[in-house]
Amino acid sequence: MRRFLPGFVFVFVVLLSYAALTQDKPTAAAGQKKGGHTDPQACHNTGPYTTTCNPFGADKKAHAVDKTCGITGDAKSDGDKAQDKQKNNLCASASSSPHEVKVPELKTLQENVDKSNVDYGSVGDHHQGPPADRATLFTQLPPGSTKEGDLVSFVGYIVEAKGGSSETVNCHCPDLFSGGNPLSIDVHMALADHPVTLSKTTKDATLCTDTFVAETIPHLRPASLELAAIQPLVGKKIVKVTGQIFFDGSHRPCQGTTRGSSDPARFTVWEIHPVYKIEVCTKNTINDCGADSANWQSAGGTAAHHGTTHKGGKKKGST
Image (cartoon, rainbow, N blue to C red):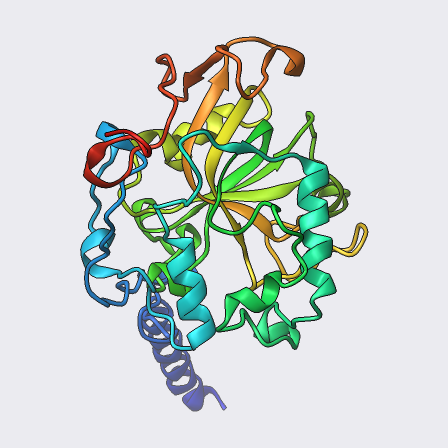
């Protein structure tokens, strides 16, 4: 027995050495780093983004994604193409004086869309996704109603702000969790008309009851609409968010306090998207922060210049 012991020890040591050597070798799928993190994949290149409108004025900032991700992103279906084109619309159709939209109106708009009985929502959640003919969603909106493409403003609070996900509209540029570039993805905000505190145990229920969504898009986005600039406003400032009103037919709203197929959860899938401007009230009470008051400054801290700049760098309606 003793004469076999040295050989056994030798084999055991060799096996341990081999295990140590292979332990540090990557065993995950291609593109994965040590520690489970993945190398961000390149955005799909679909050509440049083009628009004749500029709601950001002199603050607009070109980004790499503007050169590689067109107005319909990398969408394949007709429904996604139609919706992504609307998501990337910097030419809201209303006048330079936006309509102030409030929570009751948003809830009514949602109810009216649902009366149309048009199926929408995530394909993965057993719905058809956004319809190719978006007009079918709005057959029950009454004459004179706020409609998709109008310029609106909302006065209230930013409850939450975070980077968006990898999706067709942004040519599947990777999200922040995957190590993506924040300049290539949307910023998602949950908005409410009163202060809201989120807790881990009741977060979804609170979002369902009190909030809807606004999003900034990466194309030509100024620094004041980046996540880093928005985060300090969350829960601390009364804001006015201005942009296009849009119906996100890829999601479903909450049913009561039960979230639908959306992130963040929200009481309606009507959104302000894209956001053209965020202003901060110089007063501390909502009653002093009427949408038409003079108590607003840009999120960057300067006096707000009202109106939206469109083709040729002029305010809509100017000559």
